[in-house]
Length: 564
Image (cartoon, rainbow, N blue to C red; front, side, top):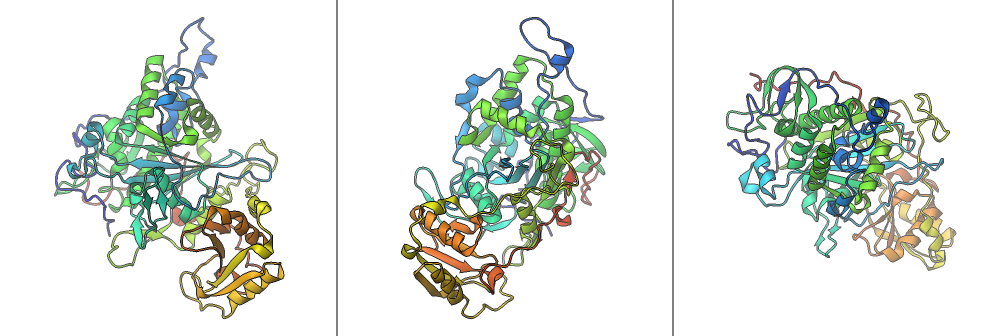
């Protein structure tokens, strides 16, 4: 079964995913072995020792190289004057703001960055590359979404892709100018999130689903992919058979490659990243796996060849990146991007793990070909990221900060203490609380425990919360949660969490409640405290289709009917 597109691929060479000039002899396709490295040069002054010259720009080793090399690693010494050209947008337009990542017990802080690929066709260059003339100047779609997690000890990096055909409930998003996009009443395709105020709503949707604090986002468009691929000199990719992404009625990206390894750049690189018809089973999932192969390969190339030859090329690369990218306000300076690149380069390619969110086909009416997060396994993957557990199963570095990575060392997990805001809360006797019985869970496979709301209300009363009501309304929650309506209630809600022994992540702001409401979930059907969750997984589930950054043998399977 094929995934359906929001923008259907048309019957012309200008359809979604089609690139002018695709097919045999497409520009930018260079079959054969990978290119060699180039020598780096310094400008001005006496010629430094060769060893020193070689070290000038050897720092980019992460899958973010496509986005940040020009503005950060390559540009820092030369392009401080470009600071004012960096395009920024709000980080999170939702109400459930989790805040930034928190330090672990050793004072080390992980980092979570949402990478967004926009299909915006808002200028001549993007329109020429993107095709689909009926969508020119229309609202963009976030067709690529990858969450990059850099471990607290900088020993490993995890990337989680979400297929663009994933159906989610969208949170309420409020634009900086005040325009409100109400929370969705039904499932919405995830790539439409960017239309609800910008990349900040895509961040909000991820935060709502995963409960992972997102520290930054970086968004790039069609022309950015092309320019950056040209600037780095090409990326090796592999196909198991000759492939041509073109259907009889003109759909497809136009990608045409020979069996084996080719070094691609420019428009051909964009074709690769956008190809669906021709890879694996012709769905968006295969496209995601191809993107992982490309990003891993690019990371290895930068580790091997990241030496740019002259200031003119550095300037061109920096300018191309800045013109193509939008970042959050926390990354609005060249030195901030440089610092980020220095953190990312600490991870060797062998500790980079690319994954796809575990998914299932939706069985809901009208959603044929669309997918939803796979119950259990998707949450396992999100939990590993939340708790800073390496997806490759090798664990984190040893307990001593700064120590080298050790495969046998246990993963470091963030503490789940109650929010510090509880210290400024009102006295318990003055905090009004409503308790709802949600013990049946979201799947409805278990009956609610009778009287459970009254039992938990009595627990709070015993702790001094005298304004507690057991609500006749119920709910459906797998995990117990506390929701509050206004910012003024945040500290009081945190105090309720502390009293009940619930973690900080269980406290959420919501416009679906009028005050502070405790939803007693399926994890707390009996007793005075919720049932602790089972131990977290130590390795990504098989359904996440993990790809290690050192795997240079990855080769895309080809869909029957798309060979030549």
